[in-house]
Length: 186
Image 1 (cartoon, helix red, strand yellow):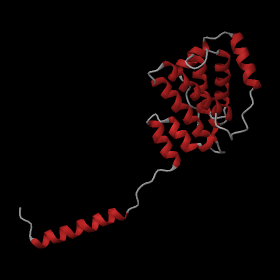
Image 2 (cartoon, helix red, strand yellow; image 1 turned 60 degrees about the vertical axis):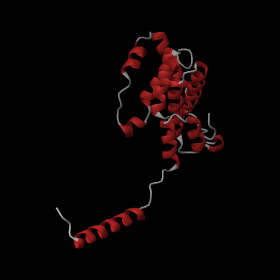
Image 3 (spheres, one colour; image 1 turned 30 degrees about the horizontal axis):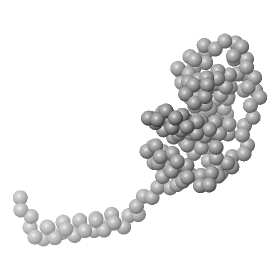
């Protein structure tokens, strides 16, 4: 099939206008949080932390970012080949996660249950696991976000505890007070 010279000229002009229109489009620039999430996906938790919390200062509204930092370090700790480095990263992750859980972030409260049941960061503490489960269960965000299923494996572990352990876990739940200062990073 042959293209006439005039058709080719029209085709070339259309392509050049289309290319110019694409060149005029602004490039998508990631915001600070999106850039930090990208770093977290790559396992670069320290760089993400510095981007989100320069100088270690946390601001109001950073609750989800605090929880995300905890998840990043916990995942990095699980992947670490050096046992000591893995433990260090898991401890940092637990600090961030517990900060978010104490602020009242429901997802972090569920992660706190896991932390206290699996014994990979701290010694297993069924009382704390029950406390965090009860806090997760009664978290008011359920009213806005809807009921979310709790991890079945964790629920089985919790249900295996006797009434004495549940009584102490309930006592800790009742005594718990949310964290009010959100200005310092863990």
